[in-house]
Length: 424
Image (cartoon, rainbow, N blue to C red; front, side, top):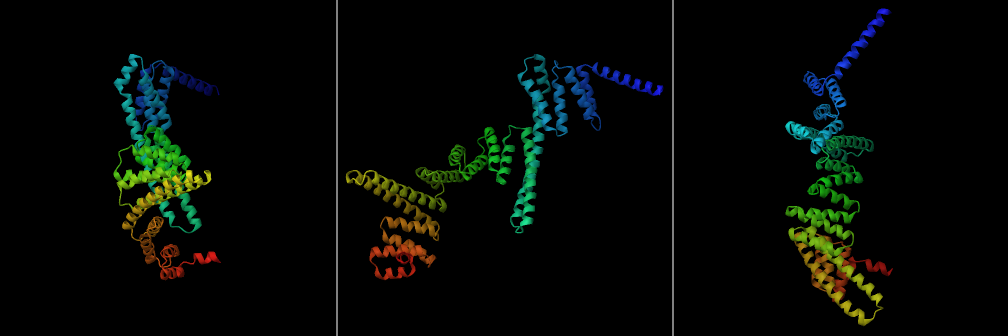
């Protein structure tokens, strides 16, 4: 028992001596010791870290720039990125704000900023690429789920897809920790959450990306889509205006103008909708969709005029002296709008001869203009495409009645039962 106590006492004395000896090292001694441990095969990260932490603790007035830098490298090697950033940020901040000549000299000599940025970039690329690969797998899985009809299998597939999306998100979140000033990691995080219909979360990440880079077309386009799809049309319009400030291809500019016109239309700013859609059509005059919607917007603008005219009539109590001049001006304006709409729908039909919606609007525009022959041609073309189209037959019936064409009236009545139903 006595021998055992003596042995334990000896160990304690030896350990105490080692600690005292360790504390006797100067700052550079701790740094050299850490580097020796890091030169071993395999590297002894634990012992190296202990030496560096001792240097930081015992020599706080050095300041221990190199100790923090090497600690950052150790954490980088071990993929402890939060700890890595903390150490590197200490070094970068100290070098950026240094007033002491020796500190400035060390920072310049060792080029800490450049070396740190290289490490950060290397680790960012690795995490980002891992995220991209995981995102590709998630999208592929999502596509494979679309054709599954069995509810249980579909649920399992969707669950697997969600796991892959979250796996990708973890990589991108890490990349934003490594380089928070790089927009691309935030963009892909937004893309992931947009893909899983978490629009609020997606916008959170897109807004962070926009704070860094508000000139990324794909980012702005996705942001526009989220705002539009969530009913935030005024915000979508502001994003669209930013997109138009960029150097865009002609097609991209036309697309932005087209989308903005729909945002304006949705908030009932029809005049602005028409202006933007006309600009889009100027760039892509052969787009039947743009032409068709332009014609529809012009008609809608005319309908708005007619509504305001009705409200005005009520407000002036049908005083002819007040009402008739305004009525005549509005009617002239309506004539111009329907003439313009007819020309646009003519272009649409020229590009898409079987577009029955465009033919219907073309017939209605000419009907309003009382150009019966042109209106008939549009509706007769619809009948050629769809002989049972009752709406077209009913419009033809109205035209034949105005023309007092008895034979055609009878033919149209056989196909248009709408008015017979009203009589009953």
